[in-house]
Length: 110
Length: 182
Image (cartoon, rainbow over the protein chains, first blue to last red):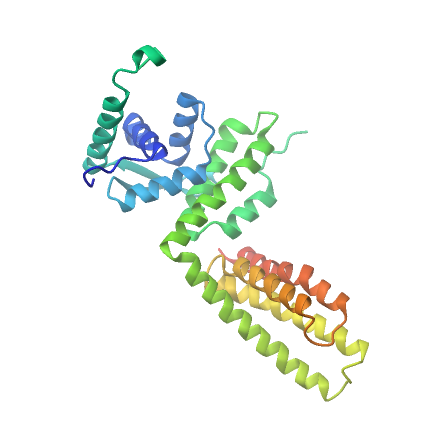
């Protein structure tokens, strides 16, 4: 991650979802994890578009699983958080933590 | 009675418009979520349509950024020019038989034009996924410009039929290829 580059909010959330889901991370589980935890309705297309951008940056990698009948014979594409992605997540999270320091009285939960 | 399969038109849109790289994964994920979580709920079809319509723009935009749609556009333009040459050759052949004022010639031109566009859509989809959709846009834009500029001596109804049915013909040609494709 280039010095000073901060992840976009959706990139940040999707990397956190990969961290939580570990080996179960593919499009549908990532989408549902985000929707259930944040209440934010998100399209599967937006998830893939963001994951592909992150893959281009070298933050995540992907591999194809086995096709299953409930998917109409289509294969899953699993995603894995790479060390560069984890570092980007740490740097971005650190920046947000520093920027929110001292705002506890305003929001209560920070 | 509840339907057990996702909306077919939404699936057709996804198959036609999603870039090849994303298509299988996205359609597989939607099918899986449909079968496990959504089908039983009352708003399942609305949910599926919402996902389909909201999923296409970000994926297409990703491909635009990677230059995918620029190449797709040029494939569609090439096929469109090819279809135009075939249509022009047919018009030259008809001019030796029928006068330009003849209604029969206008109708035959229309049928030949729409058939060549449909065949072009088929070829475009075969050459590159999404090229049939790009060709539909090209047909729509070209016919709109020709009508607005009042080029040629064809009646207005001829232009309007081309404007509506022309883009659909390209889509239909592409759909025909998708049905045959494994």
